[in-house]
Amino acid sequence: MKRYMTHTEKHIVETYSKLFEGLSALSKIELIESLTKLLKAGENSKENNFYKSFGSFASDKPAEEIIADVKSSRKFKGLQANTWN
Image (cartoon, rainbow, N blue to C red; front, top):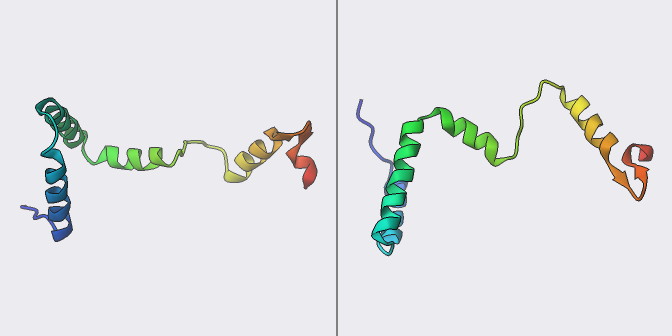
């Protein structure tokens, strides 16, 4: 199945291509290597990168327990934050 680029994708490629014209040959090679790694990584890394970009983490604890842990670990001027409840 052949996939065609959308108008937006074509515009992005054209815009970046213009930016890359000013790069040195070594920089262009590095860019090609980075893009090749991304292509080889496949779709699985997209989801991982998405979650990594937000600082998310995996935990089996329920949200309420994580919130309680965070609140109980906070200290302000010698007082624990949970004393304000």
